[in-house]
Length: 502
Image (cartoon, rainbow, N blue to C red; front, side, top):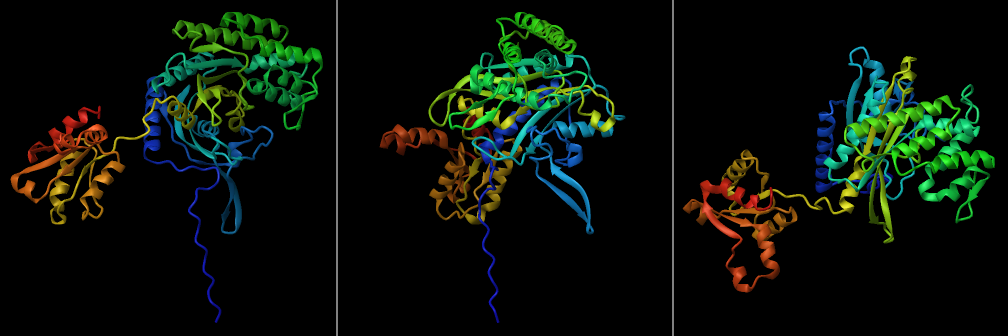
């Protein structure tokens, strides 16, 4: 009889492009999400939690990679009793699900509908450094408001949110542009025909991607992509949009239209798009946003008109905005660089139309939570460790009910705490466990202390500090450990925790 072949053991490893998060990382994210939600709530937005799974049809073709519509998602086809059903996919962002939700429940929702949503999204794309297939987003959108006052409000809220989570003024800028202005430039440059939008679509795609690479390629690199093409340092050639010299200069003029003030920038843009109805409408919208920002006290040091903002998604139809962190960090090779974008969004008046056949105005922003957390850590603005629980040690197995009584009192008082549940035989291991948990306090009560109605409270943070530099005599004096009456447990622990702002 043949031996059964043993199944190989599965590898204990994270799938490629995914990351596991532990203690402090999860706690930091939750704290940030709570802070962001508080700002969104203050602005009058309601929470929405939609399904993580959508039909591929509902998600549509509006993926970040415009060259591969309907790809880049984790998808599968339902099998219902042998019959092939709908194709389903994990959501790749939180905006496409909103369009479906609004179309489905529009008769029951207020107009405008203001919602915020937070959660993971999934993209089946090639992972890389800092680029994962699952990550958190935090969105806020207004659906049903055609006025650019809704866009201005989103920009103001984004500014307030960054400051609330710990990014001070001077370390960020919310940059604002308008796709109508860019379309006007395209029209003047001869790569957009308003009567036939499908014409020159390939060339426009190359132009948009070229503009979006300004920071990385510089003006000369972008100019090459607008023309015949560009060869990079490795020798690879990227075919360009094939624009003539005059056409390219119009686009280059748009990219260099930034001036010292928003008013001067708007005036330059108005000259560039003269003759384009769409372009002039976009300039007027930018001017209105600038006026609304100024009226609310948001100066150009916080929210600024900047023509270089393009945003890659094809569904934007009006104002677009991007929050960029302006402080410098060191990359993995020790080089200084700016941290860059942590949030972006814009107006997308055609997205709901896919479901309803009617244009529904909408605008919104998405914050990359994990990236924002990384920025705060890079600046040392977040603790790398999380305050651990108070640990009640176990000196006598038979008195577990006494120790559980202590931890129950601490928890009832709102103090994070736990009883040591490992092998209590080696007391030193219990204190090592408390240290590994970053516990501020250990509670100790043996039989002698129990008989006298007292317990020992050990300030572990103070003990660690003393151990670094104390003499033998000072260490033996045990100033970090005090004896208190059993009834003073909660008060004594609170007093120690108050020294550490807990």
